[in-house]
Image (cartoon, rainbow, N blue to C red):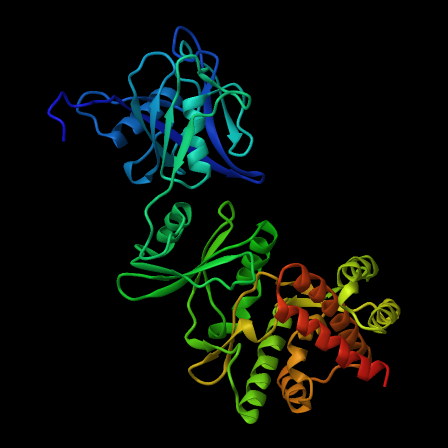
Length: 460
């Protein structure tokens, strides 16, 4: 510690007044005007602390003075801290950005001598021109990070511009337990379940999603999942909110979802992974019977829908291109023949499906009965499509097929039997194309195994 004069910096506060619209989250910005710094540029409502004023009181005061909205202290949450140095002068400052999602009053221009515009802007479509300092704070906020350093150099523009020098250096938060849990996800999860005492990553190596097991200080357990994209996030959230409750305690319950972070927190299930488990034949048949009951409950959790059309040809041709080098004589002819059969089948009804029903997405509960999880591929589809991957376990085990269908509550119709074989062939080719291009030998081998099985059925 040096013995010289202590370094001091001014502190200013910034208000991220946030609302959610159909197009996504938006924030309130004002355009500076008159004889003020950065006149003509868009900026968040902001200001300096008064003597002996705390930061929360300051942002509430600035909101009232600049926008007319009234904010309660309990609705102010810390978002981002930015250490900033302007391009003119050498004195740096600390900017503390606060998020507010609840207030009273309608935002309006309260200081027309300093502001000539005020409006809501989507977070992913911020306006130009904007103060570079403000943009640095919002960039950190959008990334879910707690802090940024924004030290501009002499000659830099006050205005943010994509062609200018971006001096923003984003800083991540500390890890939780022994695992680096992204700060944005940590904030989301702790809002949902309270303080996290420990986090361990338990992601399945082959998926693009990431999953953490979270433990609270009292020993409670949850799972945090960040999806690989908005499609999978939307599917899983929709399934948890509409269909999964029909499974009762045999599936997780959704605790919280964040569309912007593409993440969910769900309750934990007490059980052991079925994937890779060595089972007694009678026990496995009993488990398949239980899976049949769960699948039936899921398929009946919402009204059926008629299929508008069946168009599998384009996808099949694309997957065949990737799988062709790994197919044996007759495989391609078999798949194309089944595609023709599929096109001639009556249009099916569509039901809510799991989308990836296989042992790796099943737990064996403490009562010996199966539990289902991972609904990111859920969608309205044919009932047989939900049986395709599970049917791989039925090869050479007609007792397992019979047990599943007994639990399901009915046998398949002749048209469904054909549809199941067709969909299994399509899934096999897709799996071979994916597995060989992504270094996934298990998926590749399952596809090859399926085609061998279908040859014995359709080309004895």
